[in-house]
Image (cartoon, rainbow, N blue to C red):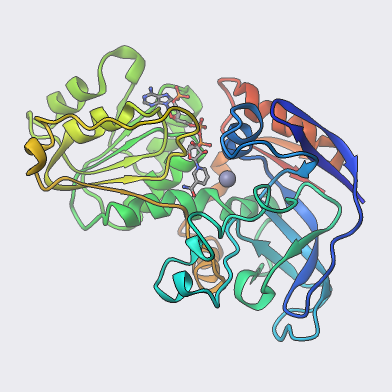
Length: 351
Ligand code: NDP
Ligand code: ZN
């Protein structure tokens, strides 16, 4: 089979591989729609997870089940399914403790394009199909649904980590596709004032549609100064970090009120340390919590998220600025993600 792969750090290309084996609990899936992720860019061009050779890329897909193992009960060949980016081993103790994304080790629930071949392939392997796949309901568009693999669950996880409550003030730093879903998730959870930090006009427009009540352009001045000005010097109850770099935590801590939470879903792809400003962290006593997490996977969660699309509470199509038809465009789509033209939010390849 053919796949688009990371050949080594900084190098990508098309390769041929044998079709993966299907274990008794597993499924083999053919993609119907795929999308590259900013994380693929961190992986290939920043070497964020170290060297990988001839590893097929991609972890965002909707597909059709091609084969299932003997012990799979609820899925059969021909089913249309959403494949979450994170596919835990549900029997591990970390999963039983409630942290399935870390099953088998820190971040080890992230398998596609990390420990095994990803979804930019003619066929790909899904472990524990009954626990990790979700059926795509009739009438839900495949391109919109592929945003459920990673963008929705990650952005929403930012709102969960920050534990956004009715009427709270929230600031989302970074409004690429992940941050936009953090805005949408915070609005659904009942945020009051909802500030969004970014600069691309497309993203700003989408942030407003997803519920942002104010926009902060970090290129027009400091985030801290702008947030403090809008909040009477108090800052916000909750901060969600979905963009920026290692130093973004300095701003996030400064704009967070005592008792607040900073929920991070941004992938820190380089550098050794994150710095916390001592005084604004209350000299260690400010009750400002920093929580960072990888998105949870799992069928139940995916079924709940897909119901938001099915019942019209969330429209992910606003994210899809660039659409390609045909598997051969996987390369072009990934290069767009790398180059990030200013009109890009998210590319999708429909097969
Ligand atoms: P994008 O690059 O599309 O968006 C990044 C956002 O951050 C943009 O709005 C950008 O603004 C903004 N930004 C950039 N620099 C700064 C800065 N210095 N200060 C403030 N804002 C800044 O990324 P994605 O939305 O695709 O992904 C966001 C992050 O989430 C990535 O690191 C990705 O790897 C990670 N991720 C994490 C997952 C998880 O499970 N935890 C899963 C998937 C992704 P501008 O408008 O100017 O471009
Ligand atoms: Zn991703």
